[in-house]
Length: 279
Length: 145
Length: 136
Image (cartoon, rainbow over all chains, first blue to last red):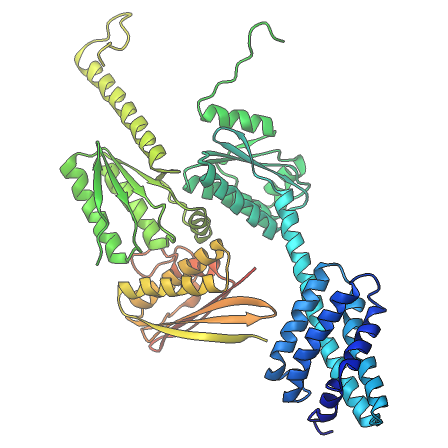
């Protein structure tokens, strides 16, 4: 099958305002309520002029002539993905161009099968570009949310002057542990704190790799001139650590966050005393 | 080859590394420090590496060597300001810098040196007392010590 | 499919060259937005390997390029010399084993700091070490 030079499709695209009007009409149906007619009209009109220009280079959407058009579609689907459009809605808007082209071909009396096929194939290719960038944009949104979630679930908090802590909750994987640890160490620098506490009361289990990361963090903190205490080790985790043969060596561990805080405060020269007369 | 300047700060020496360390610079610094400790009678060495963005095994070994040789010359070494990324990398590399004291910043490093030298003075005073004067009953440490 | 761009080669003949290799690797790692910790790990590995090239190989080259695969970017650094080669690679990769005055953390340490590590060596022919670090 020979590669069409796109002459007839180009002619159809240029056949006047009718194509644009029909496109907007056809696209409006699946997008009902999502966009105003005005906004949809502007988007279609901008896209149409980019496409008309691109068809000068033929109908192969992978060529350089389509760089601008691909960029436009990528931008569009990213925007719509963020605004919560479904993949069907986004792709339908592009596929609606087909209706407009078929109608135009019919009217011009040039509605032969070859033209219709060519136009159809071309719009399909554009639809695929749109769909792909839509999927990519959604993935990006998901990974951004995952990052935000990580940010939310691992707050590094200041407990006392010179004492920061990170209460870890939920299952730890290697990647998450690493990010948390980097954040904790950076906080030591930013706040000038000499004590860090990693509280793992909310962690149901650790594997070898996670235990190693915890250990490495303690050693890294020491290299920076700070002391790091691990608190809240559950019996099962203590079992794991022993069974795995991981050496915790001279690392300070405390059973609760409160004990760890007391230990850290004593380290900074603070003594906690109960006032006489109180319980 | 660039040289790292060594500054005198009271009875301590301050080395602030602001350049990309080349192996020869590292070796030269080690020699300079040994000489300066002896010529100034310094009791402490502070190495500020807050501007250093990588420490590989060669540079890491320098810290350990400087700590060891200054100890022989009766001075303590504190490495201050190591960046988190550098610390994490060193640990991954398997280098824990045993025998090297560390602190978050120069100020805290100085505090450590002061505490060490106070302890040393007390010890020396005690030794002197023990050598020279029999401990007087109920006298405790001499007021002037 | 992995694609590679921006290949740059630097000679390693002096200690200053080792510093230049570090700077080049750092710049390229920043370009592909490796995290700060990953940048530091890669540059540290490059420093160890460049020193090996200089000390054990006599001299050689470092080649740095940017990789891209499945939407992730990475940096590949290749250290090549035509020195004596390594007779026993397994031994050379053992942490703490050293042929000279070092700590024996050069090769084994560099391997721990990167995502991909390959070594090609033959006695009398020289040594080529290739490392890659990918964005997370």
